[in-house]
Length: 441
Image 1 (tube, rainbow, N blue to C red):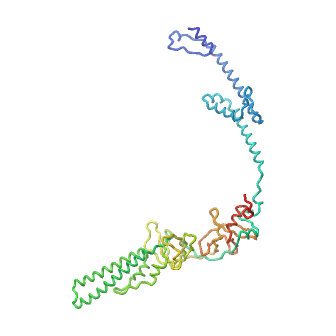
Image 2: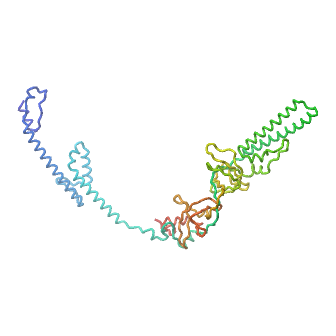
Image 3: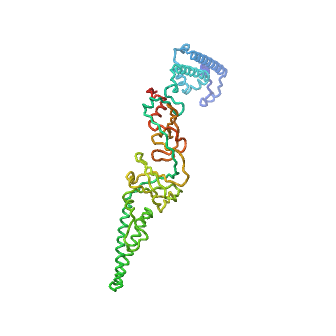
């Protein structure tokens, strides 16, 4: 038993400690440690030689890659760099791969660096072989800055036309938003008010007749009281309809429809402008910005519909509504559009209103709408600075006016603006002259 154990120890050079299950005899046996020490030294020497050999092969691979030579490993067939690298990472991810390759980090890093340098050198050579593109400044019609140079024949072919803006003084305005009102509810209230006033006038005449009959003792007291009750009820009906009309449409319309000083029993005479207001003109409710008040209603109002195809119209401040929205805290006004322009507006349509406010006028110019371009979130115009030179200038559109926009800064009345073909000039500038010459990138 002891001899077979000694042979196993000498053959494998491993030390097996005695097992407790083997009994006292096996536990008492102590094999010699000298063979195990010699085996460990022999294994360490072999591992060091293997590491040196692997490091030598890795350096040789790095030199071959740096010199762009095919990889040749002694004793092995030729392999591509990609295959070698993929095999390295495959072994590295294996359970025992990291312990095997951790000693070769420096050589493999050098190998990867050589591969990267080789690839970058080839990429740089390809870039140098590409033909260079001519600069845009050398092309005809190229722009130096925000502008473009166009020959006379090119301007004629594009149909360019220039004109000077009109100098004017602009009265400060308050911008607000409004809605075109439907006049059907107004007509309904006016009809109800008219019916109530007719009933009241009839009851009032019966009451006057009853007073005469009572004075002649030809009418009982009860019949006379009934006539008085009917007159009071009809008067209350007129007042109720008038309050509805005043709350929803303002006091001026209510006064036109039912004058407060109309004597009892007199024939009702409404204002002559009331039929025009109810059937001909257009009413626009304009809500001023929160906190704004307009005391003077004598000025005019410039109404601009949202639809670009509808021309702006002029309106007059008609009345101030008696109530204010408790949530928005906005004062509301009624504006009246004449019957000649009311057909351009549709009930329920949203509009923008510009109301004249007191203050000194502002000097500026009127830029035609055809001269204004929208580009990169700003408004631009082209100013002709020379016979064949057009400069693009940014402007601020202060207010819309008849025929265009009022501009208070950046332009003078002597500047010549491109009023026809401005979009073609912009295309020529952006294409570096290729738009006008037919040579595009």
